[in-house]
Every structure is written in C-alpha cells, then in structure tokens.
Length: 130
Image (cartoon, rainbow, N blue to C red; front, side, top):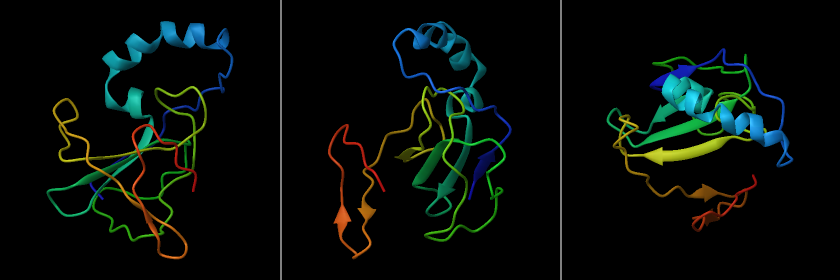
C-alpha cells in the first residue's frame, strides 16, 4: 500500500439536477485544492513497488483501515463506501494507472473475479456492481 488519506467530510447526496447546481459551482475549487479534494478519502495500492497502482476513492470519513507501507491482501477491507471528494452520490471509484503522477498517468484495464472464479473485464463506461 503506497498512499492513504482520511479525514475529508462526506457530502450530502445530490441526486436531482437542481441540487447539483451549487455543487457544480464549487467543482473548480476542488480541482485547485488537489488530490484529497478530488479523490476524497482514498487508498492507493501498488501491485508491485513500481505499479500498477489501484486507486479506491470517495471512501467514508473515518473508515480507511490501512496506512502506507501496510501489506494489503485480496479480500481485505481497506475502507467503506462514502461520498467524499468530488462526488455527488455514495460510491467507490476504482481505477488502475501506470503511475502515481496523476496528471500524466495512463489508465489500465481492470478485471473482476466473480465468486465462482469467473473473470469479467468491463466494457467502456460499464457500471460494475459487486
């Protein structure tokens, strides 16, 4: 595990178009504030020392259970679903990149293993419910 951040507040869920207007007006400020303001409470796990890197973002405040340097095993709970950072509804954002330089990193494919061992590689913009 290479990075962890906890302490960002969770937002009230904003589901209607009207409720998202105020939120949209503050988005530029979150971008200027950097990664914690965008990813919220998050964990970054490195498969190997030099990557690839898995980001789990928008975790619930106070639930991040790991610290940099901790080993993380498959199936281990590292946090809980939240609504922190640049988020309008509770969810966990998962992405895999080739670098921790978020401005230059390239996204990498991510496959999910099902309970019977089946492997699923989601399509572009596919929502995965696990």
